[in-house]
Image (cartoon, rainbow over the protein chains, first blue to last red):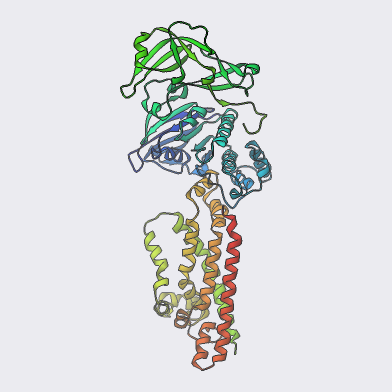
Length: 373
Length: 223
């Protein structure tokens, strides 16, 4: 299968207002984030051909799926789309394997059973082949839906609120599995969510939607380093997000050493193997600033950098300081008093102090051999 | 005593009506549930007309339409060489028309009960509209289709007004069991009427029991 990027442009004034343009490359995860009613699901439906906006263009690689200007509209069954619906939408009269086989129409009949088994294996449902949806738990239904979506060998995978209906532990595990799939599938993945945790954990890119319009978009790490997004501050609290590699594990001390574009960092964590890529999140509230390198402290991490932005939003008591540490833009939330006391100005050299327990490791992949996490 | 020929006419009419009407009912019920088109409300109203019209009124209009002076009646006569009115084929057609709501409405509800996401998911699985219909929608609406078939059969056995108006009372041709019962009562043959009434009662109970059992067996398939 040739690598195909997805490019989407949708515009209409009603009944659901839409005004978005975006693209998603193979291997990337674009999260469409916004409150309910902002038009997120409509965007997915428009990509799949289940909805036809007034003005739309949807392209997958060289194929045009929708182009209202040229009156082109491929029906959903002619689009190589994998769609995981919010309530899974499994076929209740078919078994787990039957649900997957339904999407294997493009394969020779003799291959379908084996292929369905392989796909259900991939989502860790080997023992549930002949169960019907009502005999499965929420998380298991979700996996069947995922296997069914992958069965078609889609050129784009669409996920509508994939974790809304499962509990926290299952959620974590599914997020890790989807993150693993992203790495192996190499197709564009578009995810709709109203929970920013999903964005931070899974997405490479994010599009913030409000009443059908793009409010902000870009790579997650860049967006999370912006000090001026007040909605983000209210929704999740600010925090820097960046990717790092596990350079060393120190099991005796309960720590791992991470390297990133800007230095090294110790995080309190045990269950990671060396060499894995991890996503790191450091809440802005947990970062302490010092103008001189301190001594005799219990904390592990002292990162040096220069102040790149100081953002004081009148709506908030605290000030957000952005520090360039190598290529990572670290955010620190401090009081107005601190700014004056330490004489913090743009360009000043500072030290950011971070406890190893404040470093969150988000998507932790322990390789392909494990089942579950 | 028992009028076996009347029983035969009744059962043939019941089965014939189901066979004739069910494919049309599945098609129309699906169209009304799944599609949006202009004049849909009018079609729905038209489907329900036999439900509210007195059987004698419906029978009257059908009789007029079947007569040799109407285009339909004349066409049938020239093809089949016999009149449509007061014949079994005419009775069958009248019965099918009178039963349209009993077939279409439950089937339409059955298709409507399929969640829209399930339909959409089928399309996203690469299934063509025809494959979606056969492999997803019909199996999911199956209990409703079965209910419609059995209701129609039972209702045809009991139909009286339309039968009498369109079919008359020709032994072995258009005299159904329910008409035969009326006939016997008129002739003060209480015993004969009683036997035939009991026969209809047994058939009704058996079909309804079968419906309940079958729909219960089909029930757990829906998750």
